[in-house]
Amino acid sequence: MKLFRRLLSERASVAVEFALFLPVFLLLVFSVVELGSAWYAKQMLVNASRDGARMASLLNPGDITDTDVETHVQTLLTQAGFPGSFTVTSTGAEYTSGTLVSVQVDSTYELPMLGALIPASLSEVNLSATTVMRHE
Image (tube, rainbow, N blue to C red; front, side, top):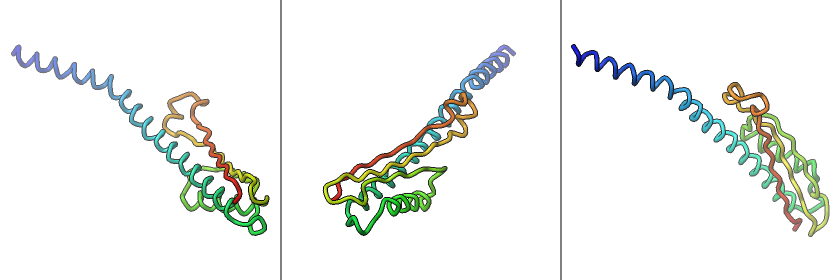
């Protein structure tokens, strides 16, 4: 009988320890997943910005405008399935050889699970990518 009580006592303590540990573990897992997703979104912005600046720096100034570059970057992000809205700003695509071309992409990324658990000021992350290249 003592053995049975001892086993029940150990099982109960394991259950209590698990109940205390589980919320912390789940918060850690969801944090890693959501921050990884935000990192992936940031890399999408960086790649689109880089591709837009590369396109603007290679083409002749009469062949491309800043609006063409912005449209190209928006198309890339939309086709890639970028989660959320973004703004694209391009300067220098219409200038002559040797000048700088700059493409900036900004977005606000929402953290759905962490946003519910963390205060409202930390539920969003501002993502930005800027690429500057010399016009060839």
